[in-house]
Image (cartoon, rainbow, N blue to C red; front, top):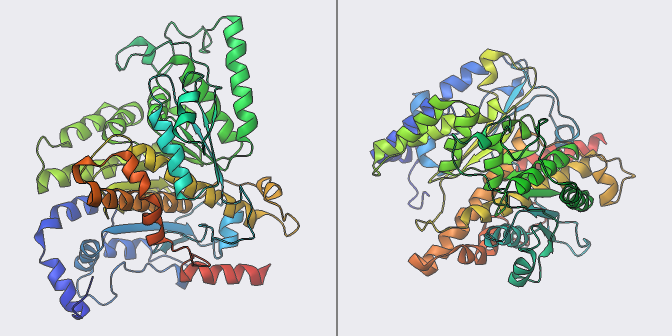
Length: 512
């Protein structure tokens, strides 16, 4: 903030003198998630259209391009960048089609997309602001699915359903009458041990819990119960706008098999999917369950990121993450860890063919590679990313990741609803008809949702810590979600679109 009225030049010099942030800045620049301004300019020099010229994220008149880019990073606690194809000239075009990205058709966005956040009007009915499903919850873990579900409600969706085991359903219902709990997840206590060397954890599912074809081995009566639970859940999911898979699911083999079926169904139906907690454990067993899913967002913490890196990228990348994790916190070690996380986050998204990754930590890092006809030499630059270190709490209590998962699901649901409505024809005036023309979310939309979810959750955590200090719990964070959301999206606003998005919407309406 420039409360004293100094000139921009003086502010830049003051920021450049703050050496405490330089290691982290250099680390992120080295990880290529924050390319220098000169690198961006050179990569965009061959653009055919004047509009595709790269713009600096700082003020436009520095003598040293690299230093200006670094200063801009210091000046902002929140960073966001997304490259879109030049064919996406309007919001309508962007939402109606998923075209292959190419090196000669890139454009730089400066702010997260926000126009999909719905305004509050009396003309809307229940369900217009989104329906979210949470798949998780077992006898041991009932708090995680509750936190994900109640966070989705507190962020602003209208209805939340939790699909859990029969033993967890009455407990979750007792937490809140606003959550609908369905006891459809069949669990038989075929536990998988958390040991990467165990035969049951191999990607080919060759353990004793599986038959010769890789399918879960169950007696005929239990198989019928399992499949009936899947069918019932799928009937409900057809009307959902987003789904969270994993919180409190447990590592029972039957529960993981259930989650696998739901992941496949959500992918076929193009339902935005947040994969968290035990859902990420399933992905580490078999990355193919999400690879190439354009609507999936993974939300790993530090341990889960290392496990995913080992399963997807190999032992070397996982070892680099583990070795970068400092035994004690200082500037250099924190910078090394941040660089390693940034590299692993981007490479995971690329290896999983466009699956978005939101890596949780002291800085929340989001990345989503853009799939399509992209030359190999340019592929690493075709990526949407965000880095969020605003707000947050030094109190790392359990359940905050579940809060983020539920918040993210609501933002993804809104993005999906907006996209379906724009994709629909003028006669498709009902919400359900618009859902029939559903298309997958773009990289920019997924990363925008991740950025907003991280900002709101970290803001709520900061407010909760300001009141409760060491006594802060996940329930306190949920309590302040409304205040954190109101700070970023005031209720009286008719639209939350940026100036660029507003211009694009006007252009789209004129074209239609």
